[in-house]
Image (tube, rainbow, N blue to C red):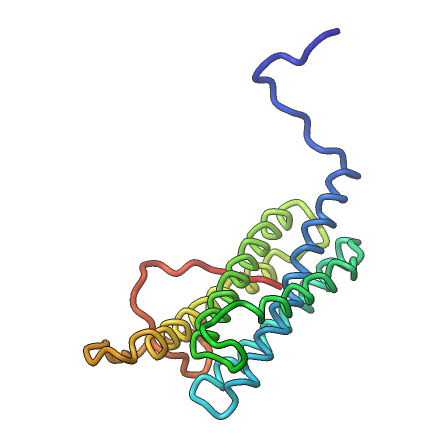
Length: 210
C-alpha cells in the first residue's frame, strides 16, 4: 500500500464537504446570535431609565439586525437554518443566568459586569464570523464584500461601546468602596448614544456576531 509522502499537502475538501462545514459554522453562529439578542434585549429592559439604557437599547437593535443579516447570508449561500441548534443556544443563555453573582435570588451589581463580558465575547466571535465571510466573499458570487465589510466595521463600534459600559459597571460594582477610584473620562465616539468612557487599550479590534 502506498502511503502519502510525509509533508505533502492535504487535498482541499470537496465542494459537498465544504458546504457541509459551512452549514455547521453558520448555524453555530446563528445559535450564538439568537442567544446574544435575547441577552442584550434583557439587559436593555433591565437598565431602562438609567444612563446605560440608551446605548444598550441601540446595541440591542443593531445586534438583532445583525442576526437578520446572517440569515440573509445563509439564504444566499443556500444554507438552511438548523433550528434545534438555535433552541439549544437559547437554553444556554437562560442557563447562564444562574451563574453565581454574590446574590442568591436578587440581581447583583456584579450581574452587569458578567453580562457585559458575555456580550463582549459574543461580539468578538461575531467579528471573526464577518472576517471569515469576507474571505469567502472573495470567491463567492453570492456574497457582497462591501456589505460584509460594513458589518465588520459596525461590530467594532459595538465592541467599543460594550467596553465602555463594562468599565463603568466594573468601576461601580468593584471599586465603590475605594475613595480613590478614578473618575470617568469621556470616551471617543463609537457611533452609539453616549456609552460610558473606557481606558485606552490600544488599537480597537473589529468584532461582529450575528
